[in-house]
Length: 155
Image 1 (cartoon, rainbow, N blue to C red):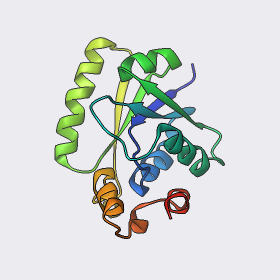
Image 2: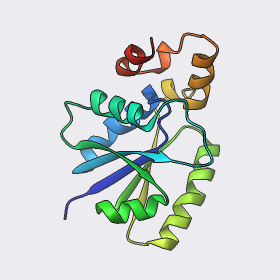
Image 3: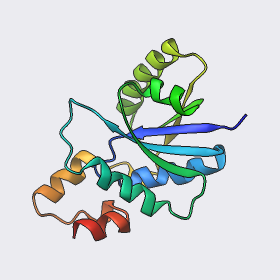
Image 4: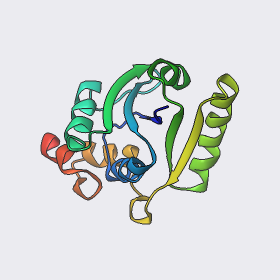
């Protein structure tokens, strides 16, 4: 059976922290679906299409990585695509507490899908999409936090 993993997120925008987690997960899975989640409670800065374009461009040379856009429960999307794993990046203890709560709920809904946590590289722990969006909105230089594909498209 193929080890399919879903890495869900808003990716608004894709940061170097996201790229770090995805690249380090490549040896662990046969296929990684990087999925842009549409969350009605959030107002994104960038369109789902733009975020998908970044994912496709950044990982164009990685055949195990594909992108998708989804809405609704992450666990349901896992079931639709046959993913048995959910990948989550952890920067701080507070991230773990929040992510564990979601992982527990997902496990209750479908015990066959396991959540895998990868801790971010220390140099990326301060990189958060929320902070990056604020820097961009206020005319700051967000380049130290972003992959080249994102920098090119917002410059």
